[in-house]
Image (spheres, rainbow, N blue to C red):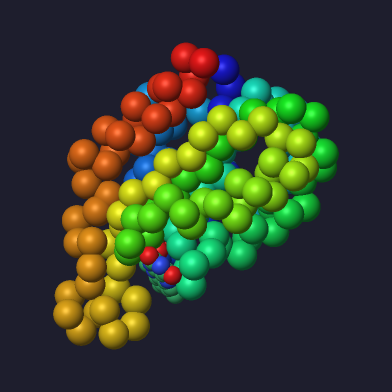
Length: 149
Ligand SMILES: Cc1cc2nc3c(=O)[nH]c(=O)nc-3n(C[C@H](O)[C@H](O)[C@H](O)COP(=O)(O)O)c2cc1C
């Protein structure tokens, strides 16, 4: 299965760590959302959209890519995110968009990511050290699970 990872990771590179962990085990291609062109999709069986979470949302470049996608016609997609709180619920909105466009939603992954935004910096941040090796192992298992489907 040819996988393309489309992502943004602008705070501490937390989401990028996940991308490297996952692409490292499945051999996928990796692309920043800002460099994405719809024509690239043709060469891939499955596309993952990932982001850090900023004020409850995926990065605007990732949101813009997802919103502008052509009709999915059953093409496989998945989502992943890192956030200070590590909540899977942050994936819900883009998941809904993808489903409404006719994509086959194969699953999503989320974990904590070191967060020093705003006042959090004063207390040394939260989720320090994340994503850690345990998070990365879970991300690897997630993507390997998808490729075995
Ligand atoms: C401007 C800003 C807003 C953020 N908003 C949230 C948020 O709403 N919820 C949350 O759990 N974490 C939030 N965070 C923390 C990031 O989601 C977290 O650090 C994430 O791992 C960053 O990923 P990145 O290093 O790949 O950019 C925010 C961080 C920044 C810089």
